[in-house]
Length: 612
Ligand code: G6P
Image 1 (spheres, rainbow, N blue to C red):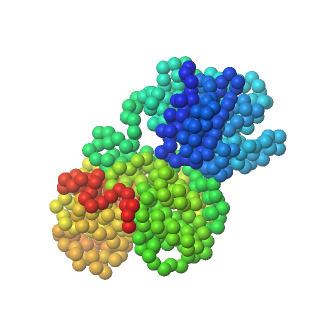
Image 2 (cartoon, rainbow, N blue to C red):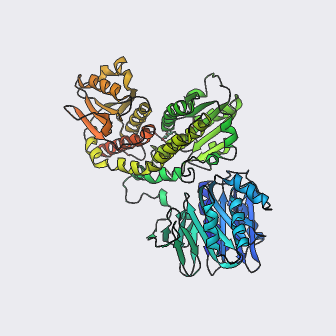
Image 3 (cartoon, helix red, strand yellow):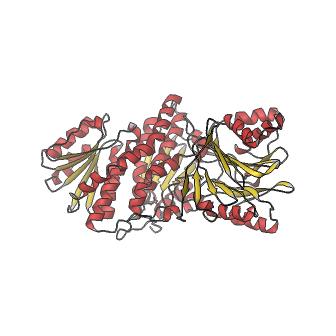
């Protein structure tokens, strides 16, 4: 997705900015650009395609100057084109701006600005900000750039991170973040700003992480931060010496363990820039998302493995909130069967790798057989699924190394809930209900962190699983796919045979297996189905089964002879699958560690299954 780099230094800024852009390439983008303020004012270069194209353009015609901003753009408003690439300029080229995020009220602002005589060069929401700034500065030529940014920002709704330069003052960059990430890099006699740390690692290891609503002014000599109330603020400085960030195992014994623990942050990252104060920001799903979603009357999801199970949860969400049919298919089955395409069908693929052969084949078949539109929810921007789908939503979970997916899974859940809300909005979801869901999503990183705090308890439980040969996982409703995923995780990495079942199916088969050797795991938040689940658990208990129940305080399920209860933090009922997935990941992980299997690279399995 979009990336920002800015530098104010005493050496030529171009090389620093280009190196930063190259390091942001992993996020995915479709065009790139740079503006530098030099002796002749602001000059810029913009290209469509790889950063290398920009590199070549700059090689042919370099930009001279010590202060500049640069950007990689992932189209949300307006197609990938040079005219839509950042930086955007205003005021006869006296201001240049780069922006990440989405401005929700840009159409209204654009109309107002047009009526005031403003001419737009692009179809982007971002250009509106440049013109707003220019308007402020025209009205009050004495105004400081930072005050203009503050004033313009007051009129913006949505999520944004931005960096601005002005020909009137080549010695500074003003940047601000509201709902999109931004970090400041501290140098000696130079300072930098970027949308994430890796972009600046070649030039510094000292970072200042800006907080929500912070405005910052950078000169080569120093930086000043103002908080949301316009008071000067002090932010702590961090030393970050790792280079590759998420591909580094750090102090963890396994990548899987590290990736499980990254989930508060990856859930936050999946949301960042995609939700406003009380709404999901629609263009997060791409330039044509609104038109595609307007025409969507049915959804078919195709995926494999864990991604298939996240899709199974989305079926409950979409049918309940949006009231349209949602069909979830195992990609390897879908590709070889005859199917009916419901009118107005959106074909959704879910994939951490973006290269799973069966999922890719399913997409291609869907495109040939009358599905009108396609969307992929994917963690790898430069992947086949992203390239071949009409719309793409990047999960932003960072590199996932362990074969068994964890942080990409929870990011998939977030993406699917955002999609559900957008579809539900068209089916009459009220603004209040949407605000309630957005608030619950915003709290999710905190609840995920609380779920991770259950680790010592779960590590101890794993000792009771390590010698088992079989395990049964039960859930109902939204928790049924969670049970399937819990069983998959355990079997993948600890090689214990595990099966997930809807709890109501117990007496149609699996109950025959229950004895005092068979651990039965149940996921049972205190929702409307909990009484039914309790009845199912009684069936297990009365056959001397060993029950391990993951439940919240509302479930009314209590520990007793043969029943172990792990209390999971309370969360909005619809988001419970995301939170209950976490302890099951930990259970699988610690069981594998105790058994001595390779949690990161389980035998016979691959991270990216590119063959049928
Ligand atoms: C493999 C991986 C799983 C993953 C599945 C689907 O089996 O080991 O972790 O869930 O493929 O992969 P995808 O990349 O399409 O999500």
